[in-house]
Length: 461
Ligand SMILES: [Zn+2]
Image (cartoon, rainbow, N blue to C red; front, side):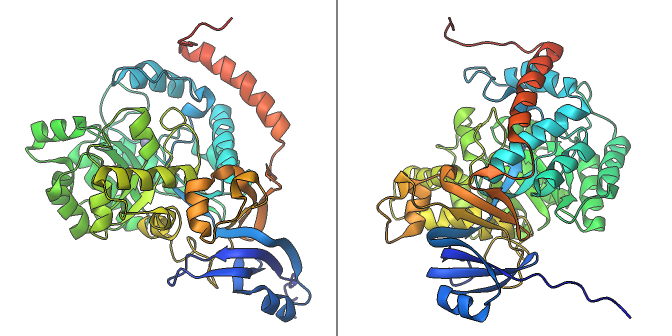
């Protein structure tokens, strides 16, 4: 006779619940009932308490409960161990050739795991529960190990480019083989893989067509970088006579499973292609500002949004925006929209929060599982502590206060698939003291091995 599975008592998480459901319901004195890994009910606190008398109760009336935030573009290796070290006054290309390539080349498997652990731990502590890796991981199994230790949701990529001269470059067959191997790598319930190319002008037509075929045949996403600056536009025009997204559209590689990182310098014909194919764009506004890439002049992400296009937000890398904080990113996106359009009625806090949650989930094809607090979805939840000074006095509109008046610092607890992975502001899956010690030692060794400069513009005495 089969032994019945033990039924754990449900968990009730109390607070003001910003559901991000289709009606954008906010339940002021609300509760989320979690059973195992999923959301079993979203209702008034009184009702939840009475209907689930055996439940364990966490949180309080003044907490703010949101769906986990979604970071659509994040490099997990390379930058983290030289965080905020690449000067912000370098000419274009300098940071790639004198910093990024030497550091990535010097990364050992353990460095990948440590680097990913740091980024994902910081992400979690700021409420980011789903991270989409940007496609520059050399040792994927180590990064998956980091994610599983922390209990965070991760879609991972690996290096893919077929131009000569750089680390991890190969011919089409080799690159596709590496992508296939990654898709075949066993992952846990919270981790998965997608096909990732570095993109820009570092992929031949044959490579991107083969990558799109592979992604389609395996039912996974495809991502690559394109047009954060006008440089990609120039090189595509020269090589193909067409702008990048028009060319890629004509090759037949763009579709709803394709997520393009950046797409800052796109014209109307490229917006048409995005609309026709359903390919999405991931906007990383802090990176464009730190790197001087022109977002405040070419804010076509706003035009894409106005057309109803598919858009997610990303935090990019720790030398391109640096801080991994979704709320900060959402606030910047909304501010840019208002300022560039010189229209205060344009895209505001509520719209930006959509991009960070349900809108981002839709753009990345995961909205059936995450992105909102709805019955049957995964219990990925972020709890903000509204007793902190930045939340006092409380605004009658918590979304305004969340996006404009706060950031990741007020995140107190985080749940992924029903499991508490941040408790009282501390990540639970790792020894933070040991992590900090290891990171400091390893970063110094990595600097030595890679030969990147250790510089400060102003002399430190
Ligand atoms: Zn990137």
